[in-house]
Image (cartoon, rainbow, N blue to C red; front, top):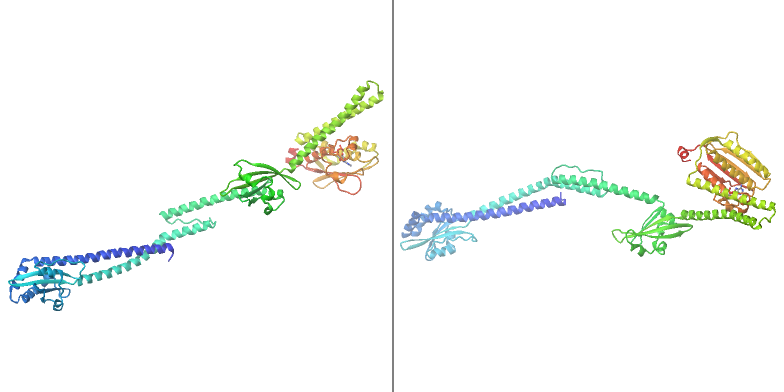
Length: 591
Ligand code: ADP
């Protein structure tokens, strides 16, 4: 009941009614008093202007007992003069002294004060001046008859008007009371029609402030409050949509920051960390709370310098964290306050490694080609300088070396071309279903003579029915042959080479184990790299280019298989080839 707006309404209505009643009361009471005074003087004027009455007064006054005669006459005219002997009385006074002679109220007459009107009448004039401030009204009329001089004095003590005013006051107070009751009832009605919807709106606004957009406010009317409620609902719906959109964007950004491979770190103007995504944590190799700008970035790019950069400008730098190389981009961003610094971290370790590998590769190619070229040149020069002085046999020997070096170069260039085609995806694989076992048999047959030449014992232990697989048979046989010929090459004469194979449902495998020179632990991880050879001289001697296993690896990867070294005890090496039986349709298309 005493809710603030309701209370205000009650107060307004009470004040309104009280002030209204006060004004109306004051106006009424003044009007009644004025009316009463006016009608008194009008009545007196009328009575005493009546010539017959006045001459009767004069006639009576001329008698010896004039005062008694006048009294009798006035008694007769008491109706006309409104004499009621209670509030209005008449008095007959001596005109010379103003002394009371007779009257309707003898007790009051004896103590009668000499008013301004009496004094005027004693001076021979009619005293009919009204005095609004006085508590009475009076008229004093001089009447002379013969030698007798009297004053007829009519006096009204305004009791009637006072009574009337008291009555009026009671009525006004009663009306005020009723008005107050009505105002309280009205305030309830107003509360129902005005305050309740406003309170509902307030509750709705509070709900929305608390993030609850589910409930729509009911629109009960078409007045201003109804329009306000509709507008409020519209506003809530727009706000909801906007918040949803903002939330959506925020979660997109969060997901982006969370999953992007580049690191992002942001600092506010006071170098306080604002944001640090998981990639940045991984790249900097420290927890977010340890990502202090002054410690990590200040020596590379001072904070003040970044802050002073213009919009769109950025600074680049590089940072080494452990064995990783990280490229840094610094930029300033502006926010409501002082702005801040944003750093993007990009891992360039692989990029650097690739560059390094490419440099190595070019150096290797140059080196590999220069060696046979130098040999060819020196033997050709020797033959030319000898000018036919060397024996025919020696010359032929030299020419054989020139031919073999040329073959070697051709071999290298061919291998490089094959690799380049595989790298660029220009090598077409002729896909077909073929027997994995048959391919192994064919390769074993083609290497058998070479193995025999080196006195190796070549054995195979393959199940009879190996599954058919999907692939380019020629390329797969090339891989098998490369692995087997390595085993022949890197096993001292009279060694043992054993080929085993099998299948594991959706994959087939082949292992080539020899008891040759083996591969030292430190080189095992690198023999699949281009031009990598454990013993360069030995490899060159046996016609190796250091590209065979690289080419084999590329082919196997194109078939979604793997080529690896098997960790095992004892001397020698075991190489394992594993291939899937089926190729997925997408993969087949790619092959
Ligand atoms: P290469 O043409 O020199 O044989 P590969 O790429 O086929 O080149 O082999 C790379 C290197 O791996 C070889 O130079 C050799 O040092 C080593 N290697 C490969 N197979 C064997 C093996 N069965 N036993 C010992 N070393 C091997």
